[in-house]
Image (tube, rainbow, N blue to C red; front, side, top):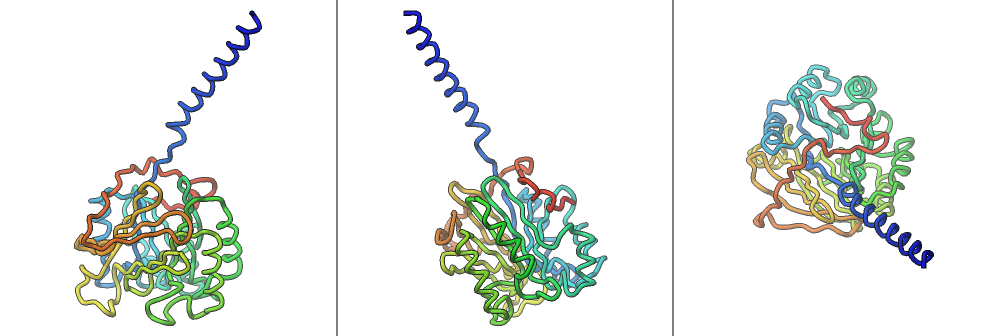
Amino acid sequence: MKESRRRCGRGWGILLLVALCLLLAVPFGRAEYTTFAVVSDTHLGAPNSAYPAFIQAMEAEKITLIIHVGDAINTPGSVSQWNRFFEITGPGRILHLAPGNHDIQGKQSLRVYLTFFPTSYHAFAEGDTLFILLNTELPGEEGMIAGEQLAWLTTELERPFRYKLVFLHEPLFPVIVGHGLDRHKEARDELHRLFVQRGVSLVVAGHDHIYQRRQRDGVTYVIAGAAGGYQEFFGKNGESFRYMVATRAGEGYSFVVKDMEGTVRDLFSVTDGPGRSAGKQPGQAAPAPGASAFGNYLPAGPYGTHSLAR
């Protein structure tokens, strides 16, 4: 009888322990995600740069995490333009930049770039999502991802993240033929195969100053358009300059593409792995912007050392 009571007591103790673990797992196992914006080709220093208007939009939407896919400034190596860029960006924001050909063009401008940023390509993580920012402008490797950077990228993509998002300046499949990584087709094709094999969901580029979204072998490729600089096919800058806002929405990310007048130009979503994304027509209702505070942004491991808070 005593042995039976002891067994019963041990059983209740195990049940209570399991219940306590489940209770504690609810608040600590739920990740919070930060709404972030993506912008490209702001060309600060050009007369028509819309970067100040973009930052005003970030203020209005309470977005503090910005991913820039290159050509932040207009003149490679200009210290004054970089200083002005950060002055406009303002304090309290996290900026991640994949440099463009107007940011780095040769060794001297790379040296200047590295006085403002700790490295020219990097990765960071938030919850189950890996963000990778590549450099298509390394001197001697312009227009490709090769050498040490390719080896590093291959290792990063082996990490067991559910979502893998890649950002770079020159597109793999540009609108304007020969105006991207297609200048080196074998290297471009190898990079695309790597994205497919390693489960990359989304690749965002700039450079073309034209917005485009397409899928290839299940990977969603977006050219983010521009927020400054030369506009080859458009007249009114307010309508042609664009940025993207990404919000974690259930099993994936929802993206809203807006022009500088605030008009929604495209809507799409991305889920884990190649082949799982969906788009909506601009006439449909846009998902509500997220209201996550920056305090919930949790860079994992060494990635946080590559973030730039100004």
